[in-house]
Length: 398
Ligand SMILES: Nc1ncnc2c1ncn2[C@@H]1O[C@H](COP(=O)(O)OP(=O)(O)OP(=O)(O)O)[C@@H](O)[C@H]1O
Ligand SMILES: CC(=O)N[C@H]1[C@@H]2OC[C@@H](O2)[C@@H](O)[C@@H]1O[C@H](C)C(=O)O
Image 1 (cartoon, rainbow, N blue to C red):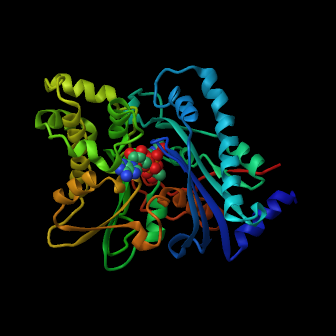
Image 2: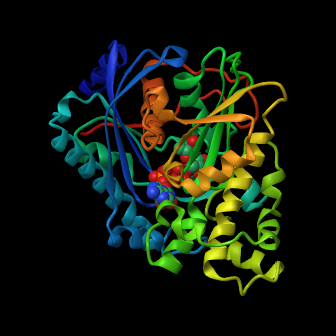
Image 3: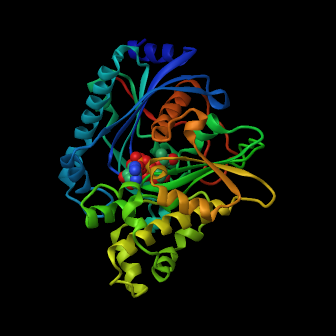
């Protein structure tokens, strides 16, 4: 037998696996690296997050990625070059983390690498009849494996599409295993560039759980922080807090068919971008709005669309707890606005459930790799958008 297949077989049979999850999201702030110890699989999955770091992207890398990010027309050569470049970089960043933590690479069983999303095109967005749902993550897993010397799972989203999903969100497959519990209705709200939530009812019925994107989280706030403040983001929402919400613009921003579409659904910065805001400003005759008011309105836009979506799963006379994660949980203006809109919910962070909210998405991919190695294919009732599926392609180091 090929030694590397033999090694994979051994890892699959271990009572506990050390898996590193790597996630680089739509905010382009850096690579999240989560060192997990995982035992069991499916509903018996148990995860201990031993270490976590975000390795920041420098300005040059951010600029390189932005040349091809979420754009329908790009320089094809740049895309081709960035694919191995980001893979190698992620492999090196992961090795640097291990060195800082004093962890030997050979003690790691597997890497689960999400890669960098550069274009996301569900059918509802691209609207080309003959083409399927589509999404593209780069930073090829072969390069991560070759640089790190660790077997690497990558490119998780294609299989989801192949079996009928939209390629995102995938969080349901990890959130259900890690966080579903009898006796508490849970909403796991992740606010990255795009926001999403997972609904976990207190009866733990796999046939009714789902994850859906809700629309923008931080992506518009970051775009205007770069433009108005020359900063990566509006620290603690301070600039937004100095402005006033413009209701005409807010209504124009909220008028998009995405918000009325049924769950689960997905979107990205291909739709929710500066062009989208400018077009809404023209429609609502608010092109002269002062900068701080625009920022305040954008925060309310994210908060309202998140709260409206959550409101749709909430039933009267029941109680729900919302567990936040992702960078948006650090923005008090955003979280306060959401809390005000959902008075019947209580709020916390996934940290209370043992997973650092900044690490949650990186942990998710470690859990997906664990599932492919040692689990099965859990059925979520065969519903639209939640196919029964195992995900991740396998790259050996040699
Ligand atoms: N103190 C803070 N004040 C305001 N915003 C913050 C703060 N800290 C983080 N953020 C926001 O969080 C963002 C990073 O979030 P995160 O790392 O969860 O995004 P991501 O993983 O790239 O996105 P996605 O989930 O869409 O893939 C920053 O770009 C910023 O907008
Ligand atoms: C295409 C893509 O990379 N989507 C991300 C993004 O970030 C948040 C939201 O948009 C979500 O749909 C997804 O990531 C998480 C990890 C998911 O698939 O659940």
